[in-house]
Image 1 (cartoon, rainbow over the protein chains, first blue to last red):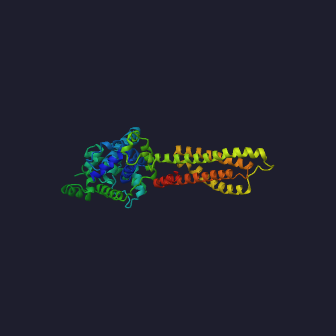
Image 2 (image 1 turned 45 degrees about the horizontal axis):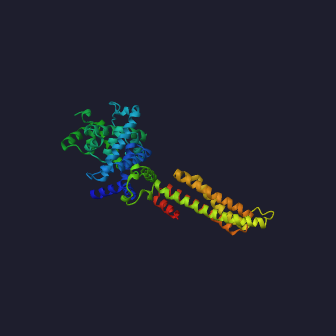
Image 3 (image 1 turned 45 degrees about the vertical axis):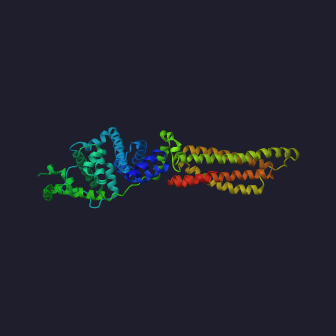
Length: 182
Length: 249
């Protein structure tokens, strides 16, 4: 696997168009899924996906085969997406502060708020409405299936912060989905 | 144990990642606390729903755009040609793939132009001689009926194809569209000049063939352009490459 990855990376560096298309076809779907959920829109995800593969092309020389090419690309995608989200967060600080502040969470209810059957569309919309910070942790943990220590490593945060962000995201989703059900 | 103490642990509880003893303690609280029980029910529902999310696929045009951006990378040009197993300038996909198209389109112009020039040179000589010996009869200002009929067939096809290219031409790379437009203008000029010549020399078979060659070239170029637009819109790079290779002489 690693040898095949190294060979593919080498061929891409040499300008082999078929090799780069092979790289794209093999990994674009998984990366697009991640970027779609993390960025919150198809348009942003498409832009990010192009940028990630451009970065990958520029950085392929640094790929040494310590991990699989898929893992290497995945990490590259997460980092690039986070950079973009951080830039966006700086510009839109006001809109994201509300969730990051303590006490801004929805008040606890004494009965379940989320409908038994949640439509995929409502869920996708609700995830897209999450503030960038907790959406990233939520997507990596709940959607992508990473453990908190892996999320922490990917996002460069502590494990406790990862748990806290996922918890906030779930509380926010609960509020959003209960609203969608009404 | 109170709600505040365990709230952050409810996530781990739902995920099933708490140590057994701690999970048991949280379960005892959840079973007796309506508020935390509601939270656990909702978190569980969300967790289950997330697993039903449908995978998203990138649109086909993402690769097309990406290939175009890659083509602009300076270090692609810096790669030694000898090292390449498939040179970028022969890409079957992406922006560079339009260069063969431009070359093919230019070739159409060259062929059409050459045909017209060859005919024009000959007809100028013959025409000069004919005009000197037999001036055109009065009323000889329209094309022969059979030529008009044939041209009408071409014109209908051209009109339909032009309508499509005008409506959907935005799918083409601007540079390619510009080249196509310029080439069509040259073909139109050849058609116009052939037509004018036939008005004065209706029996000139070379002029007639030149007109039909130019009309055929225009139809072919427009057909290829429409097919290319369709493949571009579908994101079918292989199909686009096939069309372009077919356009290459």
